[in-house]
Length: 590
Image (cartoon, rainbow, N blue to C red; front, side, top):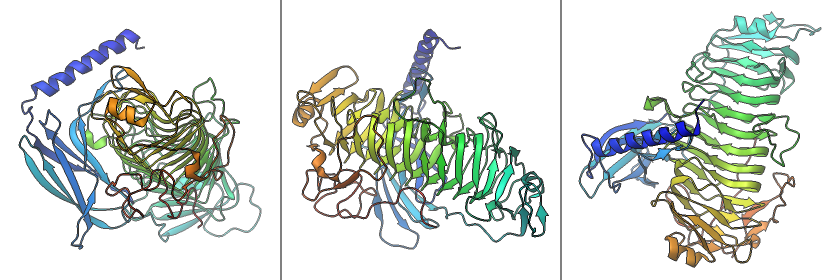
């Protein structure tokens, strides 16, 4: 077991190694030297890239990004790539030195479409390069016509049977081959089961209920996993109810084969410690969509003394290329998370990258609505709704970035709307509406290399903001803040000292941040009241759309590929642009 002295020694060791890397590299210096441009696995709506470099020790090189559909003539601008510059992450518990690279995503793209993405690397100290990547976004997984249909009946089925008929799910698991559809009839099908046979990309193995949710796969209780799919690729689970397990679906631990191409769609998961989980760095390209996943925690507030007790996480994944969207998850400690893997493996191609969480409806979380913890690069968390949670969005730690938190709606958060901790690095936080029963933005002060723009932080007590960043290149501007108490407004840690500010103007003068920040109150919203700590609100209770003419309208900064197509003179603050349709949260109508 590591002692605190061991941890301190590790920090010093990693810091020394990092300093040696910076000063002793054979190509160190202020001139940038381009190395490998790496394309992360594409998802349905996003493309992610990493451009590794040497040099640029003064950190003033830039990479601009433009993109277009293949065949179009006009280029469109995207956000510039984030500069990742050997930040030391998770310093107190497991120090990890990030690489020397640029990383970034092009977002809000069309599925199953080919794009050209152009990168221009420039450095005033010398060194320049241009690269163009051609990448195809993934298509929404389709369920192909089966090569063979197996009719799977529960043991107590008494009626007629369609051939070929199987009398148990265990028999079906033993018999399936690529291209098979195992069609489960209503009733209780017993688990637990281990599925060892893989499908293929063209011919997945499909397990589907005949009628929505009436085919129930039941486990032996919270001490054992229901479906173990470690090492089995291209499996699809549709229109099923899974219940009574430690994990409803599990695909391996660290270093195990994991699973590729898993699809879980329109299922109901009940009474599980964890709904869907993989800890394996080898798991890739999952699609988890339109499910209802409900834990068994009886309360969400106050937060229990036992950490993560009793129901753990709704969806908890690691790897690359995963999409988790349009799910309704509630009554867990964490609703949706990246698994607590620890520091990334040495192979950069197996880092945790290119993960998308969007349009999920998350509530009743004893800890976090969404955890991006332990991600590495190009994790995109956008257009989610989080209601009734201890923390809204978490990154503790994040290994390099970017971690995008964009256009999320948070209401009745009792702890931290943004939990930024353990020296997480590489945060791009844009257009979130954060409404808390305490501080609007109260977080730990151990985060670095962050950029916050066009957010709303609306609380009820103490400071509007009580946090800070240890890196001078963190930047806050164009955000809206509610002053919750007279004599308290903004409290900021600059890496050395805490300072209290009574106005945005004073904060800008003293820190350099928030030159264009604005003061707001609850009257900016269409229909919202200050949340009462611990009170349970329905996810549809708060209407966080903006009132026309309020201080948050036209008060934002233009951000390419983030707020394209805004109305008015400038983008609005918060998650909703005025007069734009609301996003759909949770499962979509079929």
